[in-house]
Image (tube, rainbow over all chains, first blue to last red; front, side):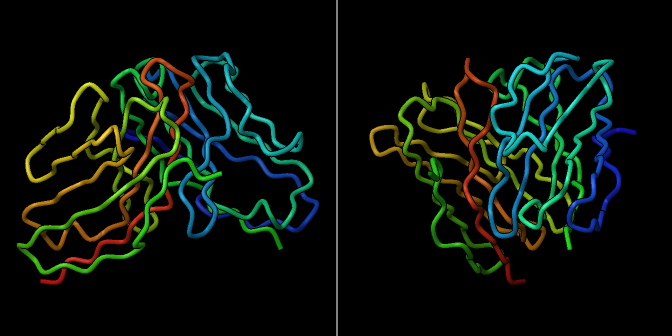
Length: 117
Length: 113
């Protein structure tokens, strides 16, 4: 497809369950980002990949959050033992260049809305 | 701590008039600023950006102004159109930096036909 694709669009998980969120970036895009957007807030940075290398994971809120991009294209964000405070929209974004500051704007997917009950 | 602040969460404007959105930032190291537009159930889409070496950047109906001394930027939309009704996010980063964008909470704009 032409844009960043995320699946599933909606996910309901019971507290304590593990979830996996998928992101298909735009083909050829080097950089991939995950952001978390809580209700009424702006997106908050979680982690950044340059190709398959995870260069920055300082935004991950706890060790229950894990992200990977093993072949430098598709990425998965995994949340273990989900908690209610994990309820949010998880946005994936990709860019052609080396990061957001290289005049290479981010292209966002439509997000996965996670609800933990 | 919110490094990028957008006050006045919502704005209503008549079609054809000017919409002005304001954004303040606290981190003086930020040197690259962006505006994103978001429709419901979609991801944000890039609108316009400005580097700290400029004080104005224009793209069609959209103009961004930067006042570095005040750590303030604004987005002007002229003339406003009904399709501009959306949430607008201000974001800031380091141009040669840590690759993360700091976003504000967003402003809801409603353009009344």
